[in-house]
Length: 298
Image (cartoon, rainbow, N blue to C red; front, side):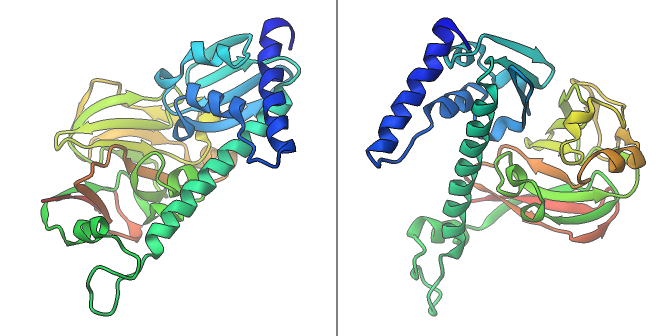
């Protein structure tokens, strides 16, 4: 990395070194800036690098800010679908290592905060207490005004989203819902609505449902790296679909041979303050059977 761009990198590193020497908490400003420019940690799907480039797979490339990336010292930013190639030069291995550490630390902090909330208890009288705050108690006590049911898009084995192996999903950074491991090749629409997006790599489809939910059906873990192989799409953005309509067909054997897991999250990506996701089915499930509900609270 040379010239003005290289100076950006060195300046940030000197600042962090001074913090470390003072025994102050080290804030990785470069990684934080890269993360913000990529649309936040919840938008980062995978991190790789080559000799000079940081290769980032993102869920939504429209959230990536090229101008902010160049301010971090990037010499060039290239979009290839949902893969963002950021040229940093010969410092890229160090940048990748620091960025992965930063993401892991951020996710761990999020997990700790969520676990603290989960571990809060209610006292023996069933009244607010034992560490649970009034706001959480009131949330539990609110009545359900309406429940919107989302069905399984595939035949397979259903489970809680918290049991999926990928942290970005299990910690609900993308949304809340459930996961299904498909055993049959057809993927169907889990609700009536409109196709809001289809990933270039064909592994995920978004649906804005007629009931107002934004649902994403994401097939497999790290399937983005297959660049569309193993998927046959039947829909495109803007298409109207009914629950049970075919969205895509999977080459299950190919996918199983090329990815680490076929765990497939089905998520409501925009859960509102007055909404709560509730798992309805676990274990063997057929496409079209109830998977989870989104309860609308009064």
